[in-house]
Figure 1 (tube, helix red, strand yellow):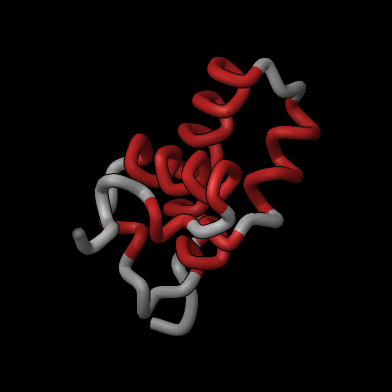
Figure 2 (cartoon, helix red, strand yellow):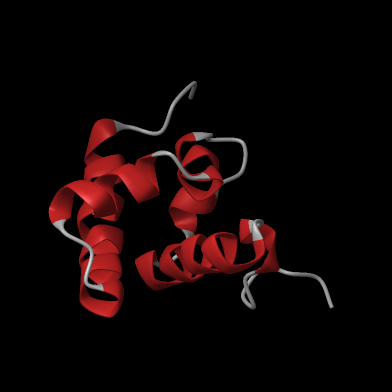
Length: 81
């Protein structure tokens, strides 16, 4: 598989964008831009990372960690402590 399929991406887009808008009050366009331009999203669409197998809430936590620390790998769910 060279790319995560569109149905999976759409599912995560909808779920994560809803979390971003609810918690941070972003409008639709700003939420989309923030998520699609993030390293977290690049990890989602890369089938080698297998991020698509995570819960959307974990993906949201990764995005949030990236916004705060600059690195989605600082998410409490995936960092190696």
